[in-house]
Image 1 (cartoon, rainbow, N blue to C red):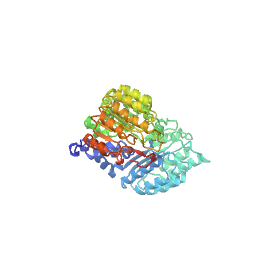
Image 2: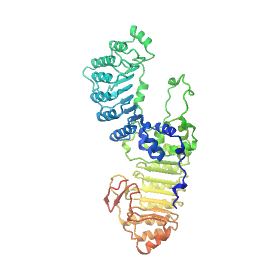
Image 3: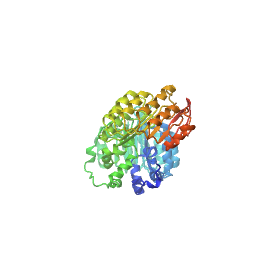
Image 4: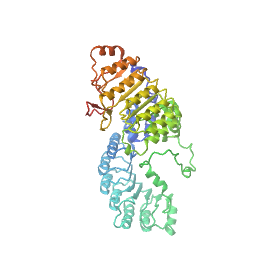
Amino acid sequence: MDVPSTSAPPPPWTELPRDVTAIILHRLGPIEILESAQEVCTTWKDVCLEPAMWRVIDMKDVGYVDINDLQIMCCDAVDRSQGQLIEISIKDYGDDDLIRYISERSSHLKCLRLACCYGISGNGLSEAVKKFPQLEELHLSLMSSSILSEHIESIGRSCPMLKSFTFRRDSEYPLLEDIEAEDIEYARAIAKTMPNLHHLGLLGDHMTNEGLQAILDNCPHLESLDVRECFNIDLGGYLGKRLSRQMKNLRHPSDSSSDYESTLNTMKGNKFKLERPKINKKSRKGVSSSSAPRPPWVELPRDVTANILHRLGAIEILESARRVCTTWRSVCLEPAMWRVIDMRNLGDLHDMPYDLEIMCRHAVDRSQGQLIEINIEYFGTDELIHYITERSPLLKHLKLANCYNIEGEELSEAVKKIPQLEELHLTYMTSIDAEYIESIGRSCPMLKSFTYNYRWYNHNYPFPESSEAEEMEYAQAVAKTMPNLCHLALLGDQITNERLIAILDNCPHLESLDIRQCKNIDLGGDLEKRLSKQIKTLRRPSDSTADYGWIVNDDDSYTSDIY
């Protein structure tokens, strides 16, 4: 029965102040915003379109988004800032075209961080920063060896307000012929053109005492210096005394660089691991937890917070949202958060930095037996489906799509452990024969909704071969073992009028039927009359498939109805 849209109350988070909503969304990061958060509701979408949301952009490569898509997303984020961008971070991708695109649209930029952006050349970077006259911070980590001292000098002259500069060349990148001489020139370029520096980091540089003294002479405001792994520097004698007087914060050549490496390695293609984050207790010493104001969203009712997080999906929760703050982490640990698990994804598993199967098991464990609905697409094994059913006796809704490694026999065995199952939806599950459908029907007497789309898929994989007789066995299995069905979808099936009548005879509660692309059915005559009396919602063989979301095989030929 259709419910008027006015009867549904607006989601509770739509009443939040817009600034609180913006803070919440900002903690997710631009990739999560562009990929999912902006689709949660119209309120969130409106907030995500505000230029103020894009004044700070952190576009690190998360490992599961194509590099070309990342560049497009980065350009989109810059466009949304409408010239208000003040800080941007890019890691593991980028070229001269991208840095030029940013510079032409971000005249107020104050902070630029680039790491492992080997496609950005020295010439491209030095030309781009000429359009950043207000730049105060520039951090270059593990960049191409094409960034020479002449480019550093050009950058310094173009950015007279520069207060913080970090440069670290990639030691694994092909070295210059005379790298020690070039590194000395880097120091001279900094000394000549960056007089307003307060912080300088030259990690792993071949700079000597002479170059460092030139920097100290010409940068009178310098108070923070990082020369870790600069082993040509001797900090004994006069130079050491001078540094102790002038520097408030000094990192010596022999100091550990582990904290620097960890920031570079963040989100760099590591497989998903279920580990408790490590906390550097020394870095927290002397810092009062009460000195920083509590984020405004921590005051939200927990049910509202849970409702917000649920809209993001299981993958986003496990990958990012649970790390936003301790309140969100606490909510994400509650079993009620995991009664519904949606593991939807785009199918590009090889590009993902985590293992979806491990993630799925972790989500199921968090439900602590309260799981009632789960959706899995493009991954899964026999072991996973058994893992889920053994721990989810209350499961009522199971949706599997393109799970090629789940065998029909194992699925039929697994569902014996979920007798309360009411909905089962199978899309392009190639190994599930009619005998397994019959077994599933016998094991799940409470089944009210069943979908089987043997010929539908979301990528251009070969269609499975089957005869009309084999496909009609599916209809017979449904008629024999699923008497309590209220909804049935057999899309793209070769079912005939005779088999459809058998289903109608044996499923007296059936009121919703989807037989799109079932071309062997003729809805004229008595069958048409019976359907009009018994079925409240009927999708006919010739009805459009535009609202379904998968590609259809129409008469064994490929069509491009991608939605």
